Length: 353
Ligand code: IPM
Ligand code: MN
Image 1 (cartoon, rainbow, N blue to C red):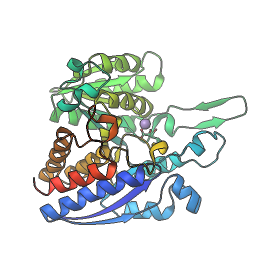
Image 2 (image 1 turned 60 degrees about the vertical axis):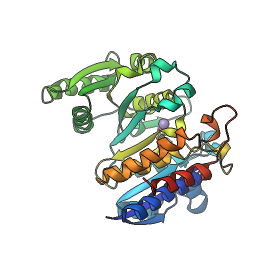
Image 3 (image 1 turned 180 degrees about the vertical axis):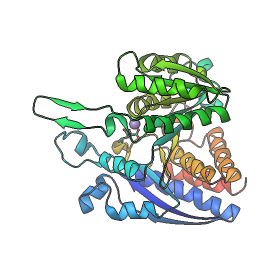
Image 4 (image 1 turned 90 degrees about the vertical axis):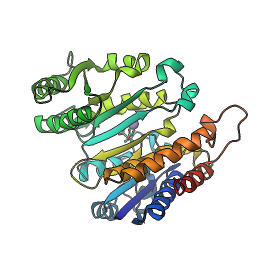
């Protein structure tokens, strides 16, 4: 297969992990005989600094004409501490999602047996936790009408039937392919937008009689997720709730540096880690490249390259088992490996799977 991949390294640890994601894809290309081309583009703070726009038109064109985007991270503390800045790195990511029509963000939460002791949760809760969060990505408060005055400000959490139906469809289909359990997370006791979600989900549930659909308020869901993560199989929710819940969910596995995601919809799909740009670690060779590498696995699987995706996953699992790990998940007294070393180990490993 020929794959033309746009690579957006972004900011902070982005470039380091991006390099490892690309290395693993190259290794897969070699091992399985696929022709992959990689073209880099600017985004985030890096793009603001060089061209004044966090998602420049050139980058949009690069993404729009690619088969897939391998994205890393954006964000810089310079902007976090300047609420009045008119351009912000995060706007680049939002612009990319919106312009490419990526309304569904798929965030699988998988745990590794050899890492259960790294989780802040009790081992018996973590073992076997395995669910997928499907986060709506181009609607809600992120994109609704905003007002920012001196003494008053608001964001509008707006959703249309069409937006809700298409994301719920993704949820029902995922649930059907997995164990048939879908949890729709909302705040229907308070929010009108949530009541729309719930009404539509109830209507649609009749078309998926094989899926057991339940509804949960987001405050309750956030508690349940750490009290009994094994309860969940497929979670579908709106943009803001999904953002928050998936950060929480990422802790279950033991490191945020392990979780990949896929953003899909109308245009070119984007594959990106759930974690952010971790600016404090930039250039230190300590960031875990696995979330990026597993995002590359999701990219391969998106194109039906199942054996290739499985090879990446197997190599990742082998690296963890062999204690080839970055500092945040290294066993006590174990040898610490850097971003580059972990990436290189996995890239080498896929060649022999
Ligand atoms: C994420 C991130 C982004 C979001 C930021 C960087 C705009 O936190 O992908 O979860 O809030 O969607
Ligand atoms: Mn987030």
